[in-house]
Image (cartoon, rainbow, N blue to C red):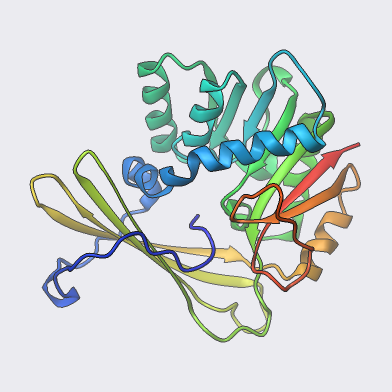
Length: 284
């Protein structure tokens, strides 16, 4: 899921929207290369941030620490941590994302455990336990009911070692919000340029459901341009709603709160003063 705040990477002249092909209804999770290109700029910083949090709040020194990523997508953070010596594991609901990650791990001789699963009822093969579990890019909001959100947190608590951390990033929404939010990214790799525009609508009246739309414009090295569009529904959270949720899973204790700049020295409060929060939860 896209991150918070309006982000613009680079400036360049483009044809008008009227001259471009109409977007195709393609789930961007079915095009993992483009997804990976958009998010990869943040990978090293996210891995640095996770390691810093583990040093400050985690289980202490271990010969080789282990990490599980919920909804791991293209495996970009798994790959980075694997290169740093972590034992890595991750699951995703999209098989194309998993195939992309497996192929890249095989090419780079990275060993990692990957499987298809869902956040609310995942089961780790072999019953493995972890020093760190994370879900950084607001994917947790795909859990549309309180029961599923509680179940996912409970599963995380079960697979963490005592003293282990769950690092959870998500966007908060003002229940009274009336404006559509817009985020834009531009990134390129190997001659492929990807522009992503995401819009999020305010929650429907009387519900906690937010409609989202992402449009990708992809320019290939030969100049061919394609557009694709994905629609989602996610669950909104205010700070109070998030605190109530956390109160239902007593095995996890909030020890720190940051934002999507992923600076371990910059702390936030769990309130509505800032939209994008990263929670550091510790297992007793």
